[in-house]
Length: 418
Image 1 (cartoon, rainbow, N blue to C red):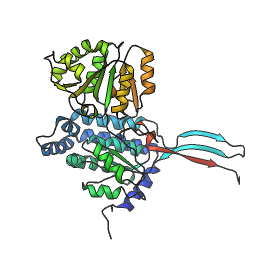
Image 2: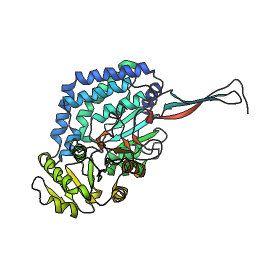
Image 3: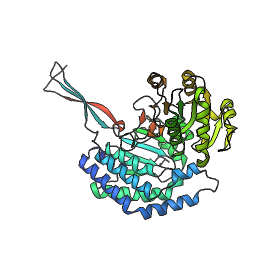
Image 4: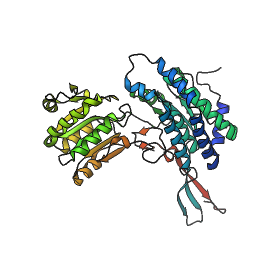
C-alpha cells in the first residue's frame, strides 16, 4: 500500500549514490553549465516569476514580494554564485587530521557527504540553485521542497537543473517535490530511514513544525532578530551608515537589523540624524519612551511607540526599534533577552568594549564596526549558503560546503589485530 511519503526512492537512492562518488571536475562542470543555462534562459525564468508575482494577493507586504521577485540582476547573481561554488575547493575527501599510531595503523579523519538532504524553504526561488550547488558540490543529494508561491519559477529552474545533470552523468542531480501538501512534508519528516538530514529555511512556524515532526537530525536556520549597539565612543557617521545599511538595504532578509540600541550620551545627535535619513527611505522608527521624547520633535519620518512586543518582533520590513540605554551592560542584557542568536553588531572606538561585546554575545556572528548584512555565505567567501544556522551542534552561522559534510575515519593497516 502506498503512503503519502512515497517518492521514487529507488531513483533517488541510485542518483544519491552516483552524486556521492562524482569527481570534482564533473561537479564543477555541471555548476558552470547550469550558470550558463540560467543566463541563457532568463526570459523563461522571468516569465515564470511574473506568473508567481501575479498570483500574490494584493495585500501581500513588500517584504514577501521582494523575497519572491527575480530580475536580470538577481538571475546574474545566481549564476555568479554557481560559478563561485565551482571555483571553491571540493570538501569531499579533505583530510582533517592524519597520524600513524604506535601499532602502525595510518589513521585519517576525512570529510564525506552527509547523504540525502531534505531542504524545505519558502518563497525565495534563488534558494533552489544556491542550495543545489552547495549540496551537490559537497556530494549530497537534495530533496527540494519550496513554497507554492514560487511554483512557476521553480518549475523552470528544476527543468534546467536536471537537464544539465542528466546530460553530464545520466542521473537527476536533485529531486524537486512539487506537491505542496503539508501532510506530505509531515510524512517525509518521519523517513529517517531514507533522509539523512532535514534543513528548514523559512519562518518561525516552519521551523517549529519541522522540529516537532522530524525524526532525523536537522540543521536549523532560525529567524533573525538582529541588533546594533551605538556605544558612547562610536563614530556616529559610521554608526548611521551601518544602521541604515543593516535595515534598508534589504529589509526582508534574516540578517537585517530590527533594533538599534543607543548609549544615552550620544542619543540626541544620533536619533536626529537617523530620523532625517529614515524619512526618504519610508522607514518607521518604533521608539521607547526616552527615544520618543527626542524623536517626537522631528517631522522627518514616521514614528511609533514601542511596546515590549516590538522588541520581540522580526519585522522583515521597514520598521526599526530604537531604545536608549545607559551603558554597555544594559545593551548586552537587552540582546540576551530579545536576540535570536543570529547576528549582532557594536559600533565603538573603544576596543575593550568591542571585545567584551564579542565575548559576551551568544550568537552565530558578532561584528565590530560593520553591518550585520555580511552574515551571508557568499559575502563570507562560502559561495552561498543553505541558511544561517542558529543552533550550536555541527554548524553555527552560514551553512556552506564544509558544513554539509561530516568527518569519518579512514584507517589503513598491514594486518594489525587487537
